[in-house]
Every structure is written in structure tokens, then in C-alpha cells.
Image 1 (cartoon, rainbow, N blue to C red):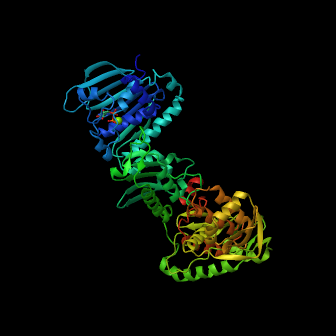
Image 2: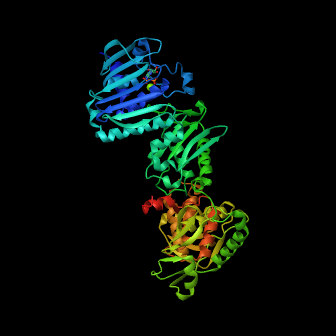
Length: 604
Ligand code: ADP
Ligand code: MG
């Protein structure tokens, strides 16, 4: 009897490999451009027609191949990039598996034209469905040109999975962008159906990344650069205003290779927690350089995934590096920080004024006024305060008392001149050359959050016992959560006792939230903690919880602030890290430059 098992022919194995490496036109382009970069090309042109389904052509000015190498390059497992298994531990090229060219050639009509500088003539090889049809001499400049026509013509099942031209074009554009960002020193041209979609001249990373992610984002990019014993992390990260609804602006690279890695993404997202809203993503170009033996790129044929030898270490290095840049709120510093009076003249009175304002602010119950009074200037307010009876009085402890150090020169927010309040929700302020609008609710939430966080980190969140402990009906999983995190919740100032079944006794809550609805707060906190899941460590959930508490402490909705109170709020914003967005990531302030106003009024 003939054996059941046969060894597959190379044509078949190539087709199988193609199933992994070549998913769609974009994956062909990824492989070809990687080869061009590995061949030290500095000028790469990508042309496609019909979404790349009809034709793909990648031309480079790299070192090219001899005829012998060109023929070899089409064999499976033929590569110039590694020679032995020990090389696998120190891969510095983008390719190394020797699979791409034979795989692509097995599922398309394929032409490879290439010339080395040392030879006067080049070689052109035509392949169809993996079979070499023709090898001939050709005239061409040094470099390589690969043409792929009718991709998947002989794998109809795969062909059916191709999407519209537009969709495939989009995928190709994404791939080209990622490669282009990784190599700002090389020129890239991407043409689709005769239309030039991307033309990138060699330049620096800031320029290249801005060209790829768009001009609006470019003013929001801040440099990051750290070097530690185990990793170097560099690139650009965006401020909160540039956040997007998807992760498509996140470009992360390990040793020059674009990757989509959960560990890396998690570290970045964690650093942005509290700076941007949940469900929003920052724009980043982050280059992580590691010794090659610290990272395994040979996890998947497409090499988009990696494995780190010391995962936690890498995670924390990235987290710290990104958080460090964000901590200084660099997106604020590109505002011209200029006081309206010279600082020297200002400092004494300024200090007094703010200290006094803070006192008044803390002592005063806040008032809401009739809706007719939509816009109140600081001056007119002064004279009308007594005339209008308060509709509601919020009994509230205001949590953003400015802290001790009033000796410093004013920060950005303190240096603003308060003009007035709009709709009792926004502070209108003026700096040297712009109108600054501040969302007072978001701002006070931000300040409360930071103060609370400081208390929490120093282990001193002040707790307040309720005069009469209250009972609360919850879901069983929420009661279980309260049990599970009992100790941790105590550090946040809560005292919660199970009362049997799904009832909980609330005995104490954080002092700063004491004046408000304590049961609502406990419910909210437990709901949040339960949602975050059993695997989430309390530490990870903390910012989220603190921001929930902060949210409960500040006044919602319209709320009148007089100029002293407004100044006190501005002052405390300067005492706060991340003052530019509220804990939920909504922006706190927005400025309109005089130029923009001039445009609106057509004065220019
Ligand atoms: P790998 O990149 O993993 O080595 P490929 O199948 O992608 O495998 O390419 C096989 C070989 O062909 C490469 O190792 C390289 O020597 C050569 N090659 C491919 N593309 C180019 C190119 N654009 N310029 C010069 N050499 C190339
Ligand atoms: Mg390759």
C-alpha cells in the first residue's frame, strides 16, 4: 500500500505560507517596502491600481540584487538577512523569514526587476502562480522594482474576501504611513489610480509625523525622549485636544518595526488616564529601542506581535516616560504666558489678592441666579449682587482651596484677566492676545481630583462618619465588590459594612464628598469598581474612582462665581497638574486668538 503521507510540493507550501503572510494588497506592500528599507533604499514609490487588486508596483533605489540572488530570492526560506539560528536572537532587519517573495509570487502574476550598482544590466524575472516563466536582461537604474498583477488570481476563495477599492486603498495608505513614520530619512511616494495620495520628502520625525497625522494635530505634538538601562523611548505624543475615537493615530515601533502590542498600548493608555476621556485614544509616534535579545519578533509571520522577555519592566518604562511628559501639561506652555502687568509690580498685590480670594471663596455658599442674567461682567456683578435674590443655595464645601505656596509668580491661568461669566457655566478671560474660555465645572472637577489624588497618595484621604449610618440596596455583585475591596475602599475614606443579603451599611465616606449625596456616591463607586472587572487591580481603578468622587464634590450645572471666586479657581488651576482637561478628559479651557477673532469679523 502506498504511504498515506506525502511531502507537499513547494508550490503548495508557498501558497499555504501566502495564506499567513499575504492577506490583502496592503500586506504585499508591507512586505515589499520592508524589503526596500532592508536594502537601504532612500526613495520608495508605491503605485497601485484598483485598490492593489489589479496591480501593485513598488520601486526602490536600494542596493538591488545580482541575477543569481534574484533567482534565489524566489526560493522559499531564501534570505540574505540571517544565516544561522543564533542570528534569530539579534535581528536588526525588518525581514528574516525568507518567505515573502515566494509567497506573493505563488498567488499572483509577478515580475521582479533588479540591478546592482556593480552591473551594467539588470535582471527581469516573470513568475506566474509560483512558476518562473521568463528570465531576461533589462536596462534599469540601480535598485529593485516589483510588479504584482492580479493578486489571488489562482486562489478564488481569498479573492472573494477582498473589499472595495476604497477600503483596500485605505489599508495600503495605513501601511505606507506606518513605514514612512518609521523612516523619516527616506522619501515615499504613494500613488493610487494615478492620483498622488502621499508625497513625503526626507526630513525629521516631527515633520514626517505631522504630515501623516495631519496639520491640526501637529501643534499638539510634544517630544518624548528617555533613556534608561533597559530601553530608550523617543518620539512624539499628543495633548488631550488631539485625542481620537480610535487607535489609528497610535504608531508604536519596537526597534524600528511597527507593532500592535497589547502591553505597549496598555502602558500608553494608562499614562493618558485622566488626561483623555475613556474610549478616546491619543496620537503618538513612539519608538522603543531594546537590545534585540530582550524582544522576540518571531511570534507571527506578519511580525506585528512581539514578546518581551521582561514585560513588566518595558510596560512600566513606557508608562513612566509618557506620564512624565504629560505631567507637565506641555500643551499649555505653547500659550504665551504673559501677565497683563509686569510681574514685579504684580507679585505683592497678586499674592494678597489671591489669598484673600481663596478665603472668600471657601467661606461663601455659592449661588445661582435667574436665567435672565445670562452674561454677567465682573464689574456689574458687584453692584447687582444684593439686588437679586438667590434662587438656590448650594451648601457645598469647595475643595479647591489654593495650596500654601503663594510666593511663586503667577502661572498661566492666574495671569489671565477675568472678564466675566457666561451662562453661569463658563469663565471668560483675557490674556495678552487671546480670549480664553474656561469650563468652570470641568476645571473645579480637575482641581478636586488632583487634590484628592494627592491626599490619596499620601495615605490621608480624610473620612467623615455619617451621623446616622445609612443602608443601601445593591446588586449582589456590588456587595461582593464592597467586600472584596473593603480594605482598599477604606483608604479612599469609605466605611462600608455588609448587612446581609444585598444590603450594605454606609458608615463613613470621604470628607470632601460629605455634603453631597453620600449614597449616590457609594452606589456610583461600587458600580464602577464592579464594571472594571474582577481582574482589574484596585490600583489600576483608582484614578477612575478618584475622578468619580471628585465629580460628586463639585457643583453641577449653572453656578454663579464672582470675580474673587473666579480668580481663586484660576489660581488653584495653576496648582494642579494636567490642568488642561477634566478627569474625564474633557477640555477645561479653550482659547481663541485675536487673529481668529479678526478672521471671524473679516477684519483681515
Ligand atoms: P526576507 O525579507 O525575510 O529575507 P523575502 O522573501 O522578503 O525574505 O526576500 C528574500 C530576499 O530577497 C531578501 O533577503 C533580500 O536579500 C532579497 N530582496 C528582496 N527584496 C529586495 C529589494 N527590494 N532589494 C534588494 N534585495 C531584495
Ligand atoms: Mg522580506
